[in-house]
Structure formats: structure tokens, C-alpha cells
Amino acid sequence: MNAITWTDQTNYRNAPSHRQANVWDVTVNGKTYKVERAPGAYHVWDGLDWVGMYATPADVEAAITPDKQDESETTDGDVLAAFEAKADEISKANGWTIARTETVMLRYLRDTSPAEAATIAAALQTRRDLAA
Image (cartoon, rainbow, N blue to C red; front, side):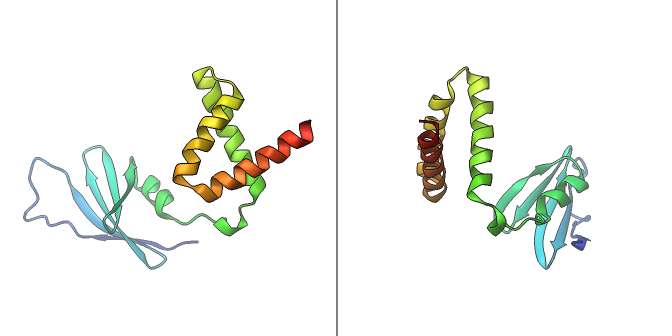
């Protein structure tokens, strides 16, 4: 299990009285994140990069704790299955056909992640060849 340490870094002397802001350095496996609690949310930064906004400390810990499954264990089948599930969700939400949804998603992926787009396109082509 990952050891998570919350170290209070709040400057109580200079904190505005109208705000309930607290600041922590949260360390997970030697990596430190900055967490600030503002009214209603915990904001998390990794250096200058904003990680996200979470409702509870448990949500913060879940977001910054490394997954047990290593990314190298993800197979092309896993990527394709996730792509197909997302395509199904988007097509139902927009009333599109699966083919149109997959085309739109692949165009987006070509701009943002060409390697992933190539993997998915090859898998989709293989699926179409098997169906023919």
C-alpha cells in the first residue's frame, strides 16, 4: 500500500479570515503534491500543473495514488475496448451512428495522440476485415 503523508503548510497568520483555506504538501511514494482546500473543494497541483479539484481528502488520495496496473500492461485490445465503449456512449448521447462517432473520435485522436490513433485505426480495420 502507498504511504500518504499530509504536511500542513498553512500560513495561519496571513490567511484571510473570510476564507477557510488550508494548504498541505501531500507526499505519495516520494512525490509531493500541493493541496489547497478552498470552500467546497480541494485543489491539487503537481508543481505548476493543476491535477484537479476534488470533494474530499479521500478523493484527493485516490487521484494522486498510482494505479496498481502499470500502463505497460495495457494491451491493444484494452485500448480498443475503451474506445468502443466511449464511441457507444457518445453515439447514444448525440444520436449519431457508430461509424460517424468513430470517425470523429479518430480525427481528434490523430491531433492529440497519433500513436493511439494508429493503434485504434489498425484494430478497427482488422475488425472490419473480419466482418466482411
